[in-house]
Image (cartoon, rainbow, N blue to C red):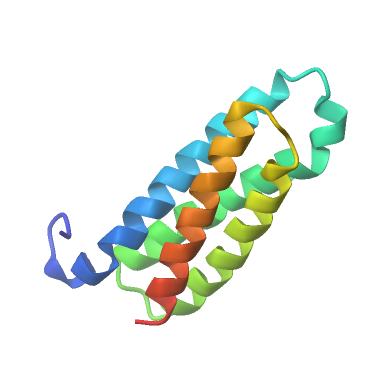
Length: 115
């Protein structure tokens, strides 16, 4: 359910998924900074920040029922999929969990984009 307006009801699952994905990406980013192979994770670490920022913007767009919400969610799905691919290359638990959350968010974003 929308927090103060019912207009976001149909988008709430996607809003929640994007918020969870943003948090997961920032947590994974922080965990990756402490991994001994940080240099090998450059692309992943960069993608984590990009994905988190994309998800944050998606939440904002949907919350205000912005006219480009669907298009933004379509792009967000692509970014989340790419982030999932990057994270999946590393076997530590935080990267594997983040990859799963990114895939879930991508799925919700695709559904939102097709509403």
